[in-house]
Length: 384
Image 1 (cartoon, rainbow, N blue to C red):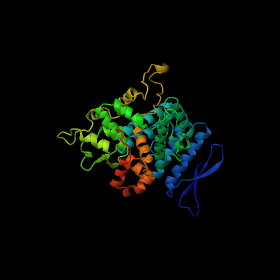
Image 2 (tube, rainbow, N blue to C red):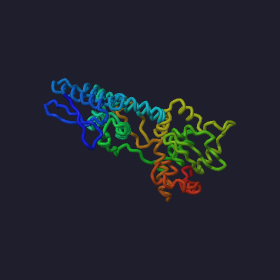
Image 3 (tube, helix red, strand yellow):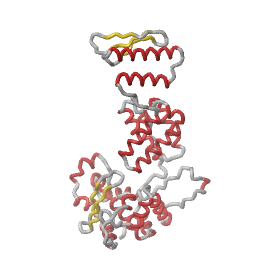
Image 4 (spheres, rainbow, N blue to C red):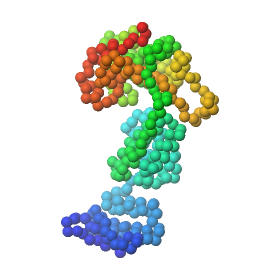
């Protein structure tokens, strides 16, 4: 029979009840209301009796906890199974993140729940570092190290929210190490000779995008959506808000880029895209795969990449695709290298390329346009 007692220096009632092995124990009810405390004590006693007779399942134990929570807080305990928490976290992210980011989150959550199977219906506390490590290793058999590490990072963000909400005590994903990136196939900068090759094999619009990517460091998706509203030829500046970081940048236009834009026909509409074909491809597909494939074909034509076939090396579509060392993103690495080779400080180079760092945040307001223009003008002219 459960009973109550109260310590002299505490306002809370103490529940006294018998454990399944026959020992008497005491637990604070965390309430000063005697009636609430009595009901909580009875719940403890009932659960103990079920445990002594082997009837206390995980579901029943959680029900007891939920009942005690409801008595103490006059509110129901939110469901915290792995599946329920992950799905609720996704819904919250739909309001906080971009559509592309949400899709990436959804993919990782779906992969996790599929990997866990029936375990996904267990309490979130059962998602330990052991399960997360197994999930990481399962992904590693099919995906690149970078993709696996991104998936692990997403889980860390989700479980950090669970910890803040009190659903778990520890973020178990933080206990799982990331994978080492393979040295083969890592992105690298272009050489000047390689840049001249791809410019020779690119059509007029792609030449402009390559030049713009090289001298501004903008990502392919940001370049494809540029319009004449972004370009001020008189001030020789480009104003853009990047899709990935949401950061607004005002960049000086290098002489090769300025010469290219001055030869284009802006038409009568200022919202006309700078690169119409790329703009059309980008708006038809938000993920930009078409443009990436087009650039890859330029690399192939320039002899800087191998033609992709699903039959080669007896690999099917489900196999992990080998990462080519060169891609459009390599232009960002190239721009960084060229700026540093020209003696530009790390802070100024990062600001131009759009790399977020503590140094940039601390010094951003002190980097004026003239400083950035001198830095860009110090880069070599790849057209000469």
